[in-house]
Image (tube, rainbow, N blue to C red; front, side, top):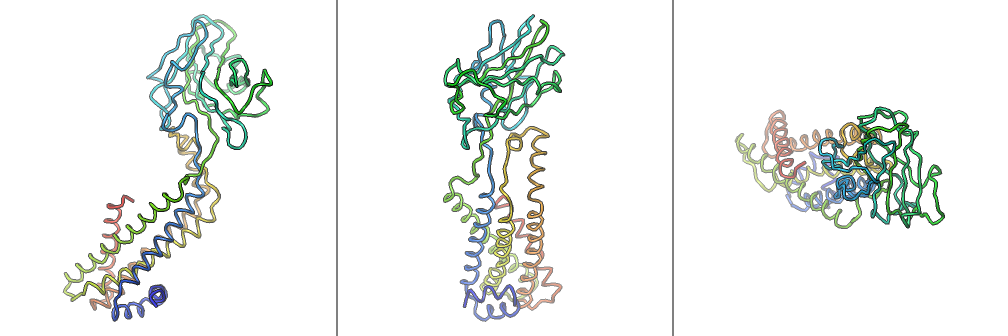
Length: 387
């Protein structure tokens, strides 16, 4: 009977509210609250289960530690190595410096990063790409040869990749972004012992035609390409959102009921608290309908991948990556936005009906009171819950 009564608010609100006034019981609003919490938790589950976050090494907590500490690098003889606090990549995942390598009167500069593994770059669970930022201050010409080495198993066994073609359109004094696919046919190995499942170091070599003063900066070195679901601990994640849904419903219920009570009293009505609160709680069945529509809409989404460019926080790159996500989700977001507007109007209309039945106001006054009370409640709820 109570379930029938609460759903009757959806298709016959005037009749349902009259029945509630005659026999006001809190079981109806409590059922609406439970339904909303279940549907809202289902919506969050649907959304986050389709969300995958790109993992990096070093991790987000470590920032780009390999290009923050010059002591991790071993330069070749004659190469000077320092930490540059003035010229670096500015982003969420990046620190506040880069590593600068320089050598005087030479055609070649190289640097090696040891003791970083073993890192798995093999199979579905291994890292798929290597990203780094490079800049050469001098000379003005592009390098004649650039080669990257990934040391595997031992320092004498490695894979190598000729990057010279990647620098054909790069210019000096500008940070250049490289994303290199791992375990591809462009990588060669010097030994059958070299194993993609055990990368322990990295070496970079830059060469120019003529001897000159060479200065190269390195920043933002990450292994990447592994995606993990946003929701790894399902139980605790769902519990937290269930509690939040209950809080949202209770706060909305109490504030909306309280404001309507105060306003109707201020206009001279002899409003009784319990019937009004039960009516308002029953009217909030609209929140359940909204959550159920969102579940249905978001279940149609493809898997959403939050790539490193988005979470890395580099200006320009983040906007482009976010734009791609918006392209994938725009229609569902549009449905959600219009559903929310519809629920606003619907809930205000239900509150206006409740106000007219209890306070015997005119329709104009009932809608005015309901509108003011509802938007005041939304502001209070947003302030308390932070969304």
